[in-house]
Length: 612
Image (cartoon, rainbow, N blue to C red; front, side, top):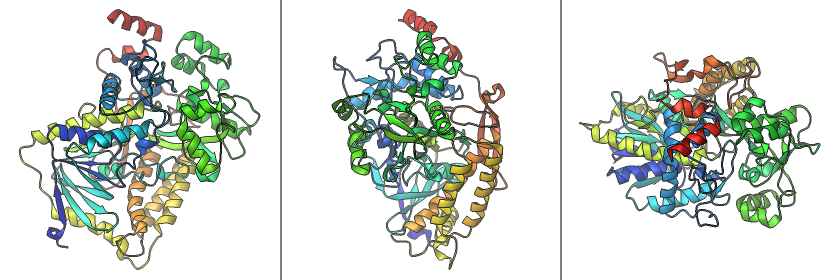
């Protein structure tokens, strides 16, 4: 193979992924004078950020003046079961308001209060109305704004390019090899730094809100390059994905439906969430002690409904109703806003929800309850990064957004993802720019590495016969759904790991029919490598963590265990090529952060008031 004949693009920074985090990172790199490229697997604008409907969490204090970054930080740590990286949660809470206002300056059109301020709504796990929103299309408005602003900032956009693997010069990143999806042509990107903003890996599960792009590409490429993966046992199942009809199965029903008054009922018509609130959780989650008591007494007229508890609690409550025979006909529960709000109110507040289900499912949510259940939605874990710079342990490799780890701990609060993209996208852009300026000599491309990456991909086309990648993907989805799902046991996890290992062996003989041009079967086969690495890491991390915390529920190890609070589960590629999964001690937080996180709300508010 003559590498010199490959097209080569040279930039200071390559950003892989064009969702909110990638766009914000590219904007920041360009603002700091970096020659920047944005590489996206699909079309610009086709990002999972648009699926985020409810809003972006930031302590603006526009609806409740008592809100403050310290309260937001406290909520985030408690929602994450105190496993969050302390510094990341602190940076997020402090910087989110500035990032939201900045987005407004760039043209985002938020809903408004009567006083003309950015409106904010209640959401699960947040003490005060904190989510800045645009109806139920907040993520779409974020992408529209970042795109409209970003395309004028001077960075190059490469659409429908699949990143294959990183290139390294010694231990440093030197660029990556990519493939143009329609033609099958390979190209080389030479760069001083690479930022991954590649999202999660929901396509490893059978029931998921994620679309075809979410195949763990960033996790696998980082792993193969020597980066560490952390907290992958914490996979969030959004409690309200549609389970019926089949045309909308897995599609999210935004938490905003519950925020606007929707309630969950079982097949007997009973509103069951008030029967699923542990006393300790109520005291941690309710705005005050009086509200906690109202929850525990089953007061269904409480100011904040129990349906707005954190996602892990709601998801488990729905599954409990199903397992005890009170589920909906298709294995979920009923989410009813039709009998709680006027039709015009629903259409005004939740326009996307109304139109989407009306068109795709002939379901009128102003007239009928929705049938919902847990759907694999989000990865709390991901690539391990430094909190301030977002750099991994591989020099020159950065990660932000869903593909990075640390911000959300064991469970993400709704609304924290969109502000996470803005805060850490900017920090990754700053970190990568600083790194580029620190280099004395630009890294060089190793032709042997490039050849190996391309041959790994083309070997799939050159076999006479082999495994069908679509059937393999179906088998993986069944494995992860059945054995590494919302509730886990030692026996089931070991079965899942064994089956993933068998799939890895089968993958050695995977075969895609046809030529390299316009070949979706080939793309499916290439994605399977990434899904298998990610699935193995999730299953092995889940087996190692012998407790139940946040989104990770072990039926054979119920409850949180103190010894597990002090460690993260980290996966890396060992010298023998096999995956190593081990416990790594967590550093102590900076002075004062633990006191904020564990403070009683009234005490913290009094301290904030004294500080002015």
